[in-house]
Length: 191
Image 1 (cartoon, rainbow, N blue to C red):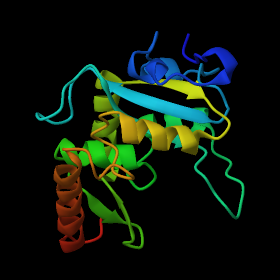
Image 2: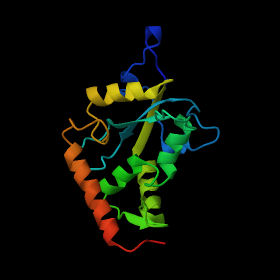
Image 3: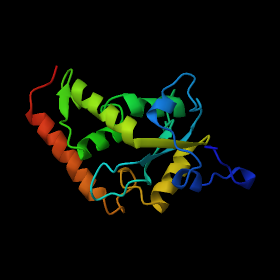
Image 4: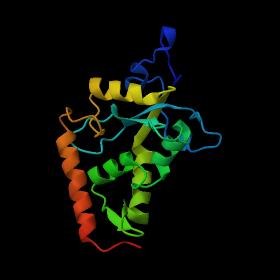
């Protein structure tokens, strides 16, 4: 079972670190999707590491849906976010941006030049890499931002940047992403 709760309703971090089941892109993108249209925290495991300094086969990233919004209500939920990470683009997914940068895909400015993606071919390559290697699990949680902060402070989550300056991989990842953005700014806007 993917959503595991301890007595009294407390959510166990172990449901993300050592889940009973992780789901592939093929399993998540079917209709009806097994991912609930509910608030929660999701965790990403990778069968192949996106970077030689990171171990494969373990939790490397957590995210939430919806994010905390003080002045409006988010329409995001676990199903929308997880599906977007598998098939969206780097402009709308920090996970995709991170993975593409680690895998050496070329980041490009697109549209008006403010958004950055890996272009049609690069995003397709990334989607295929994720289909082959990325596996996801989740926990339903009504206010996921609180649990996300706890997980980032307590676990080794090298692909998370926000709230994660204490992680040994943080500065390296930040540098890799900054270099990719700088190169993208130097290139012409992609069609």
